[in-house]
Length: 231
Length: 205
Image (cartoon, rainbow over all chains, first blue to last red; front, side, top):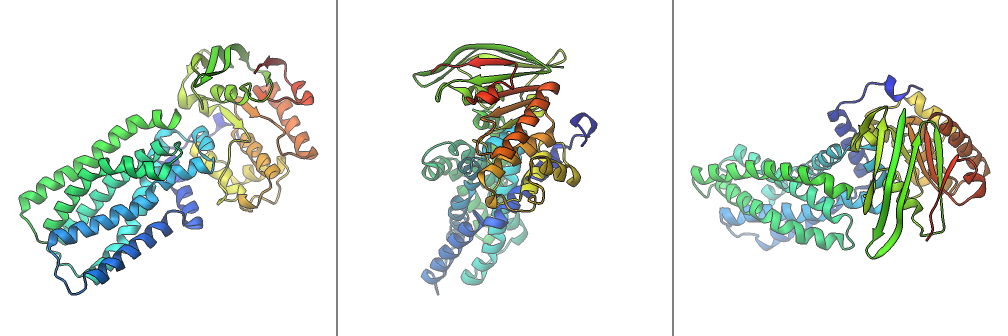
């Protein structure tokens, strides 16, 4: 058995990949987050489908419905990463063996993957059931990607903060809502324009915020994370 | 050479003082046991040494030769075995070892994993899911990870918790081996374990 000094240390990205692979492996074996997300999304989608059958909805209502589904479905599962580590008492081993930066970005990437799966599953179903007109499909795809990046970044630091609390679920919703609301409003506005309800300038202004928001949240969260995770 | 020095460590949880002004210094090779009644702060002291808790006052300094190690650098030279620390039930024993070694930056080969499992008496059980392990087997797996990591400082909370006689013998061999080559710090109230250590800190409740 080689000693540590005889081995070459793995790169930061290789450690990150190890954490993401571990989380995916655990998730695929338990469906801890994915089942909740998909079921919540399905129920919401079919409730909307039945309620609005035969009605013509405005672009803004379509946009709002899409993001409400993503947000509330995501809310059910996104706190899972850190909360499960604390509840299963695996957080101690994780703290001892993985660098804080790897843990933060690993959980962020995992949330991003989970939300991406949700959107890939949800959006085609929404299109089939609600049949919205999409004028700018590729930009809408970009809006969805930036939106879920923002939701993942916000939920990662919020989940880390609530993971040691007693009422984790309620606290996660209460803390994450005011942080995610500005992002949701901008994402709804941008999506509405992509569907056909607005001008290019409004879309460009929304895109700038959608790009800036996750970058700022990720940067600030990363600075805070070491303190939140280790204290 | 590793040097670990605790300077006037005190810990309070709210209004309740756990311990006050604990100081010690250890150099490689050495060993120290922390004893005391339940609630006297043995596990808390070990967590502070491991960097998992911040003391109310005082400081733990760890030096490698003359360079002081900070944060992540300290964790690289340390392994902790504790009943409070769990691994992932959804992974197999071998997958758990593989993951934690990769996360620490020094991946273990399959041969090393098999060897470490064999050393703790879990030969042939590496492919079983952790949820199928008994509490004693889980404790053995934590020692297997410590063996793989080969740390300069080994911190053990209640070394023989959940272990049978053969498990205890494996652990005592390991502890004796570590105190000859590195720094071993453990918390216990078992007389036969206390005698393993060269130095001792008694905490009072």
